[in-house]
Length: 242
Image 1 (cartoon, rainbow, N blue to C red):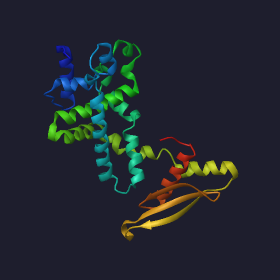
Image 2 (spheres, rainbow, N blue to C red):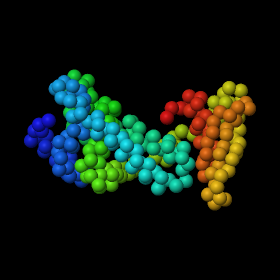
Image 3 (cartoon, helix red, strand yellow):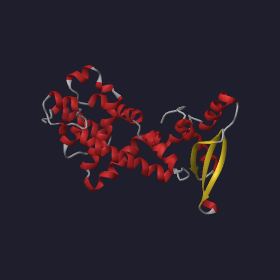
């Protein structure tokens, strides 16, 4: 797809601002082309950002997993999975895309633009993933390193605040409030198993209500394992959503 001089200038300014250097300017441009544009202009869908998004989704999850695994060493597998899901949610990466100015960069079909697709969560979130995919491809052997660098340098504060975001929901309090509202009975937390050496033990906990297991959790401390079990229970009871 031909790129105008004005568009090249716009993409060059974006690269300079965020320390990127694409030899393949068409690849960078593709990261911002929505399928509504290719459809309206009878272009192959492969010229939209969809395939880059597929690649970038994997890069994003790996980069976030890498960070969480190395910086939150006391998190259980369940907590790591939950934290990653929060960070890479469309809601969050939509905010990242807005910060980077994607609303001005996205290329949409006329109808989609009329519907203000340039501020839609799903479109901008997908474009953010597509950009990570494009960075990964452009930088070849250094692609993952550069994509991770780009993510961390621009959004490290958001990633580091994940534990605070997770604390917004207190699953134990929520579960207790729910059960007391039913019949004034409290849930009970039972340690079912302990695995590992004394200094690095994983605790497995069931939360029981009216003689039934309603949630399970595991962590490197009893307190966190109970919290995981309560979180599992309130999810199953549809008291919160992921």
